Image 1 (cartoon, chains in turn red, blue):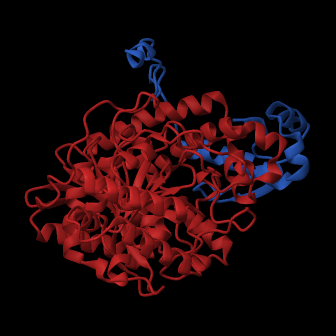
Image 2 (cartoon, rainbow over the protein chains, first blue to last red; image 1 turned 90 degrees about the vertical axis):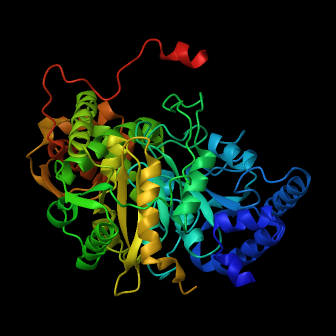
Image 3 (cartoon, each protein chain N blue to C red; image 1 turned 180 degrees about the vertical axis):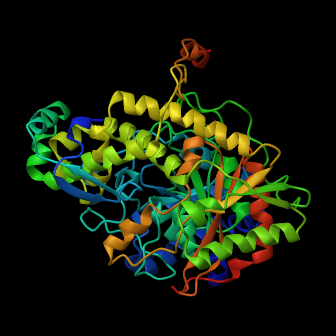
Length: 464
Length: 89
């Protein structure tokens, strides 16, 4: 039974808990024991809240017995990237600077998970302030990839990726400013969505870049991702960017298939602008052929060069991030990891005009995407250009880290989901990305679910 | 961008921000005033390479963005005077 519970989906666990075939306490105990056994090697957690999680699971079981399930995720354990506030618990952002920072209240998304009856198990490892990169000069060690612990798990939501892939949790929340949910999802062979900007509140989440930050779920299945996103989405007046439109039932259209859909293929991102590892590229091409074989019409589309999207994203991101970190980088720069310091400091040299011009450029790049998407339901492209590299080779980590096609969708604000597309000959996961129209996460999930079902990659487990 | 420092005499290869950029930037008479303006004198004293590379990286990013807006092109976020009132409502 334990082995089944490690990799049980959140949806199935929720169904079993609702049917009283499984208790939240049993599931939580089993996953905590697995975490205690594995996490000395994988470093997914900064702070495991075992006692609190067990108490919360018992309370979920009691509430279930009294009034039935609060949601399809009632009693399901979920972890939080350690930039997301949980009342009374430290939010460190994996940084020496915030070691004493105790959250006074729950983030909006934390409160939503609690309302759904979820059990919060603890705070998960991140790259420092969601930007630093895997680093060894921080108060906590970097998370490692369950498929090969010598390799990095992607980031910045690295602990979220590691814990879900390793069967410690069925779901976790991460954040995504230039790809930080989709990168660990891609590196760890799981599913991660960056919702439309404004779909999920950022209130109570340590900011990196106000106009690019998003909170999104990491799960092992597309259905679970849809359920968790539905649980955390919704209007929050505390986030001025949060959109008031109602949250649809993402599972309602999940199984409708792709027959008759029109899907764009942004091939030049991974064949011209950057040249992906051949096996990565073939995984994307194979998925495109698969979609065609299932009745979708796939046609190649062209956007402005990836480098333009990436640079525009970076000018905005670094200007906003530097505004947040300016005082600390002027007075205590040595308290940051070297990689964090180096990544944020360029923001010091952006002028007001640079920033404003980047936001003007952003409008043009949004318009270019919308024009290319005329008549299309979704688009497919790369997420990473190669599988994750060995963490002992930091130069290679740095070199490959920016070789990605995720940042464009933070810039344009549209939803984008990363899903597994296979395995590299070195045994590490391959991934692709599906992009939708603004606020059409349902279409991303629908296309992703169809690919997931055909590829059936979830049967393969990391060797932990 | 602090353009006066471009095309000078020390090199920095920086791929940290998504770009492989080689900019020639130097210690010059302008450098102390740049540091003073950015408030990074202390940081430069501790991590001079990081600060120099940051400048080169910033130069490269702005260049790579290729933003050539027309006069009337609006930025992505436009101030809305009534928004605060709407949120309160």
